[in-house]
Image 1 (cartoon, rainbow, N blue to C red):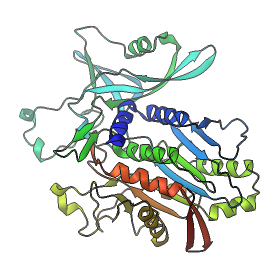
Image 2 (cartoon, helix red, strand yellow):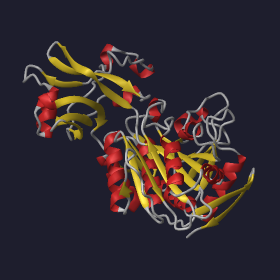
Image 3 (cartoon, rainbow, N blue to C red):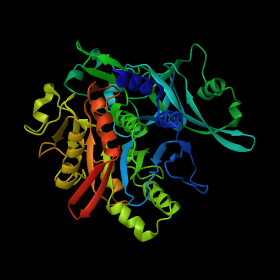
Image 4 (cartoon, rainbow, N blue to C red):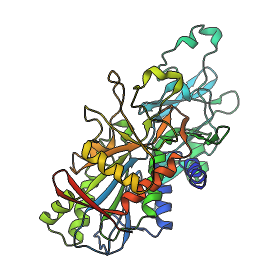
Length: 438
């Protein structure tokens, strides 16, 4: 349970993508990683451990091996953002005697799961300080808003399904104007101990105040917000900092913006991964030809959670290809190539799991239900190397409160550590050889 308790604490402290990136940064620094910057020259050294951040929302960490004679890249990717609601620039709404917040949907949350819950407002605030624009992490650290349901007396058919309009039905209430009319930015400034006039802009989101716990008579499950995809992000980080490889360059890319399509400068569809692999290679003295050879011997594991079997809705799942909580790492398959897994990449990753004594399971959707897309296919548009899409099975994906198995995080950390401890050679197209580098 050590990993689980640590993960739940990570969830507790990671209320938004910016908090999650900051907390990953703290883990890396405490593990001896050096922060370097994209707008400065790099001086990478053998056996060095480094990381960069972009927009305070994406983190890319990597290690340099001691042997540079036959380089390749072991790459993992996940994302730090989750579905939620974002405050609009002019967010104040008044109606009758209540103050409300004008928000818009971020990603694709399950709307009704956000109702009748205590909600924090968290994110980042840009402040002018000494003629500089400075971002500051922010959270009220308490429930300051809620989205109330309509009573069943006014909608007798509510239990038959209700379509919710995010502009009118999902508006958070923050105060009763008969008390004292609140200016939210005044409260933000007070919390940050700054002058409100120095606030230039902000990226603020709703965050569920309840942060997670272990569930089940045998402690089989965890329930928490943002399990998709903070679970994989946390697992990859723990695997990376505990790995040792004296021949391969290990890279972990944790992106922002996956829930809204990844087409941002810090998303998987940016050049962040490509630019970083190139800079590493050229900094280590490789020419362009040698860089391409290193890429040809490389591999990507794209980690994003999977839709686990829900016994209450059995007809939504494939009869022989469902995945289950606490049954191991999920290898995602899709004939339409929305996942990058193919026979070659699946075979290699299964060998990794076997070497690590880690459970794994294959999954695919029903033929009449399309699944989601993932980071792997997006990343391959700029760095085209063999790739497998994996995840951990969870329930209620995109709910404000999701469920995962307590055993699976252990499988992920140990399986990915084995991947990071392995050096890969792609001798011929479709013929892989590998060696452990422990």
